[in-house]
Amino acid sequence: MRLIIILLIFGSIAGLAYELIPLLLGRYSQLQGKRMEKASKELHKMFIYTEKRRLLSVFTITPLVLGTLGFMILHNPLGVLAGAGLGLLLPRIWIKNMGRKRLNNFAKQLVDALMLLSSSLKAGMSLPQAFEVLTEEMPAPISDEFALVIKENKMGVSLEDCLAHLKQRIPLDDLELLTTAISISRETGGDLTEIFGNLVHTIREKRKLDDRVRILTVQGRLQGAIMGLLPIAFGVFMYFTNPGNFDIMLKDKTGQMLLAWSVISEVIGIVLIRKLSRVEI
Image 1 (cartoon, rainbow, N blue to C red):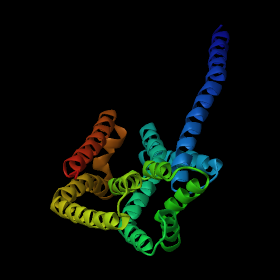
Image 2: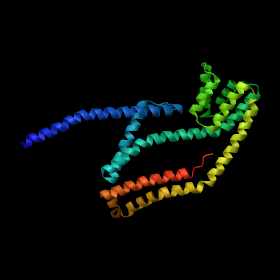
Image 3: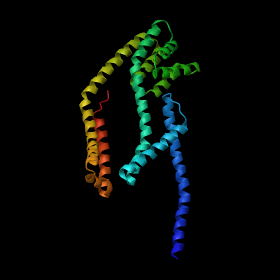
Image 4: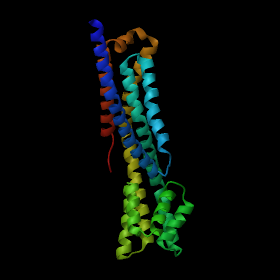
């Protein structure tokens, strides 16, 4: 009788697994497909072209590796979940960081690009010709973006629409000033060389103000970094110098809950400090 009950239980579990595992795998495949599509679009905006299967390997291997490392460090399921969760976030953070750096590089090149456009227009060139000179003389990423503007314009897209597409790809206030000035000048007339000179002065003054605000808020940002790293450094120091005192945080359920809460509160504190020390201009 006991054998029959065991067989029935085993059969029920096997049947349930047979039904659920394909469903879970299908759902996971859909989620991964959406993530690959979004990541691929973001990389394409940065003119980085890669195969989706390579992205899939990165998005799949990273959680597995970090989940394994988490289990090796904590020796419990909590380490697996923490490592796998971090592995799921790291590729997205990496792509966003690349996009942020690219925007910063574009912003740094914009003043030189405006001066080059103004010089080209003074030499008698048209605006599309000035854009071609910019793509030849300036490095990436600004040359890549204006090269795409030229290609779209040669395919029959109006220059105003090409600039609107550029503004969508590069969400910068300084670039919006440039595209708006060009659109208004083409509609109502005006000296673009003088407009570009005024834009260069405006952007430079704005950057001076940004640098001053950054200097005034450096103390708050430094305090946030120190307060964020200090508990982590203290925990690592205690773990390696006297592991016995730290075992209760890793092996006891109450200690694990307190450790999880401390990590959550630490992240919340870092986010709040960053928000409070950031001043929008």
